Image 1 (cartoon, rainbow, N blue to C red):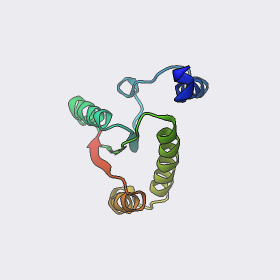
Image 2: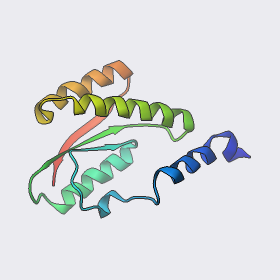
Image 3: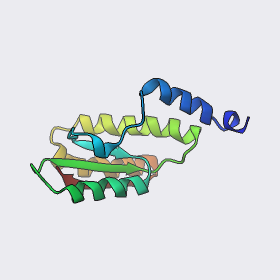
Image 4: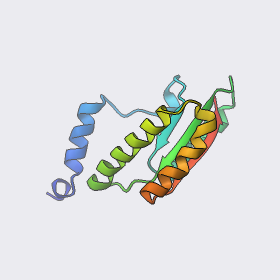
Length: 121
């Protein structure tokens, strides 16, 4: 009953329909322009992983963290904030030069801190 009350069962059911199994960032061969995390601990792990594998082709990847509490309300709000951030970033003419302008604007608008760093593949 407790899991039903706090929304965990609903989130798990939704996740089950969205993806067939858990995914590990470290196991993919894909390269991304942007990696978004929702927990500072995971942000640190992503950066550590990217640095430990060493730059191979020096393609930049922006890693951004928006801390989201692990509950249904925060997860829903966080999804909208991340969508807004991705739309703002997608609309940039030059990601490398302009992302540094977008991050502070979103932080001010949302009254939330974002962590951002650039790593390389």
